[in-house]
Amino acid sequence: MQDLLAYLRKFQRFAGLQLYLNMAGMTVSSLLDGLGILMLLPMLSLIGLTSMFSNSYLEALVQPLRSLDAAVQLPAVLLIYLVLLISQSSLSRFLGNRNIQLEQRFIRYIRNDVYRSLLEANWPFFLGTRKSDLTHVMTTELPRVSYGIFTFLQMIMSVLFTLVQIGIALWLSYKLTLLVLVCGLILAFVNRKSFTASRSIGDEMTTLMQSYMAGMTEHFNGIKDIKSNMTESQHVDWFRALTIRMEHNVVRFSRLQSGSQFYYKLASGVFIALFVYIATAFFHAEGSMLLLIVIIFSRLWPKFSQLQSSWEGLAQIMPACRTLRELQFNSEQAREFDLKNLSVDIQSDWRMKHGIECRGVCYQYDVHRSSYALRHIDLNIPANSMTAIVGKSGAGKSTLIDLLIGLIEPQQGDIMVDGMPMRTCSFQFRQTVSYVSQDPFLFHLSLRENLCMGAPDATEEQLWEALRFSAADEFVRRLPDGLDTLLGDRGVRLSGGERQRIVLARAILRKPSVLILDEATSALDSENEAKIQLALERIRGSMTIIFIAHRLSTIRHADQVIVLENGGIIQRGSYSQLANASNGMFSQLLHQQEIAAVSR
Ligand SMILES: Nc1ncnc2c1ncn2[C@@H]1O[C@H](COP(=O)(O)OP(=O)(O)OP(=O)(O)O)[C@@H](O)[C@H]1O
Image 1 (tube, rainbow, N blue to C red):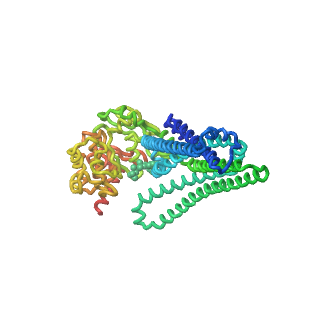
Image 2 (image 1 turned 90 degrees about the vertical axis):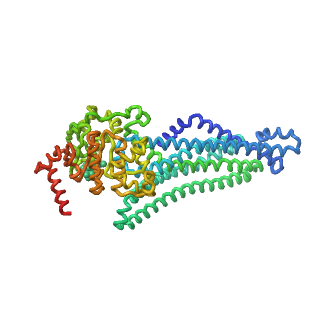
Image 3 (image 1 turned 90 degrees about the horizontal axis):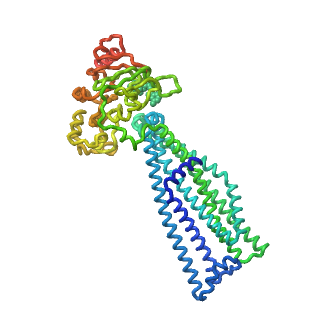
């Protein structure tokens, strides 16, 4: 409940006065509605259907009408009734529209708030969170929370409405109204378990939707594996079992709600029959009294059942509030900067002048385990030099790169940039880094938009220059719409090597101070790789270049080579020094690659 209340408090702060104005308007609307119903009674009396003015309040209400000419009494009552009805409907429509606007503005606010807090979170937060869980919260849980706030507001309005109706009913006959209220409370007490049941259904729905989203993301990301290994039927079976559980979950909730509604309807019928029977058989009540019983029941009872239904709806969405709040809390805990103030703190023309230094750096992904991804790393990367990092798979190369970019912080040791601790300048530093990963990512946008992502003001000439650098200009010229070709699933599908070259062009377009290439040319043929080697040679000395390479032939020109094994640096030096150290790991790796090349 406290998760929902937290969002409601947020909503209250967000809506401010408008929320209270809407509520006041709703109370007026309820009053008008109640008055409209009251007008029905004199109307019925005037047309001679019933005589009910044994009720002194009603008599007082209708008294002014009696002073009118008999011929205009009925039209006057009908006119008042119509005016009340039209005013109530117009006010209710106006308030309904205002509420929707307010709610939608709030949903937009929450969406942006959650999305921003996710993007402000640090890299370890993303390492520890499934991507599908983020998609799940943004696409499924967030609308559920909005729906919950909407339901809660409806409920507050219903409570106000019901209170006004109870007030009018008390005015008409307090004994009867108290009796109806007691009956309502008894039924709510009997139905109290439905709240707990709704919450457990909501919990299950959250878990099921999480699995659904995770499954869909994984299956479609891995569709090539599924198709090529013919594992479709296993996935279809998994999907069928999950959707059966989802179906049962929704049916269970719907059964629970219809069950409550059924009991309320049944009780209403039984209570009315009982009251009418007791009133006539034992108390010889008049027709006016019987009519009052029916009117009060028919006005109040639907409100009770509506409240019950909203209450169950709220219980069902509470787990969604908890999931959303937890995610937002975790991402805020992991916040690494405030986007609003970031641009103020960053100098756009900053460039690294001296270099990066690691002093006794240790890093472990799981602090509760004894294994380290990197141990006691001492390393100096001078500005504008070229450094190659090599090592077997799992040696810690990518982890070292993440530390050098400032995406993660070491548990022990320091990383200094130009003599300043990385943690004090990592945003400034990252702003001038271009990073090309092993698995280059292009957005589903035009080629031009993809290139301009890091350099929005790049000219046509600069775009082509960057493409020439990455040996991509020739194939881009051949694309149907050149730079304006749409890329991605529904655009032109590029090969792995073509993607790498575009991402490399995008990286160089930013004119970075530090260029980091994490196996960025692994998918290229030797001709294009050689072109990129030449291009890197040309820019050598103008920026710091750090690259991970498995193909050792590509690192000949590096100023220093770092060899990692099991998280530690086991060798360092120039390419020729390491190649000549016959017992070293580097020369072994080189030898293995030479044998592999000859036997191909
Ligand atoms: N997110 C993570 N959580 C836990 N352990 C991780 C994580 N990422 C990497 N590791 C572990 O840290 C160690 C170093 O991994 P890293 O990815 O840095 O190696 P690598 O040399 O880049 O490997 P490769 O060449 O295969 O990419 C490995 O033992 C790996 O299992």
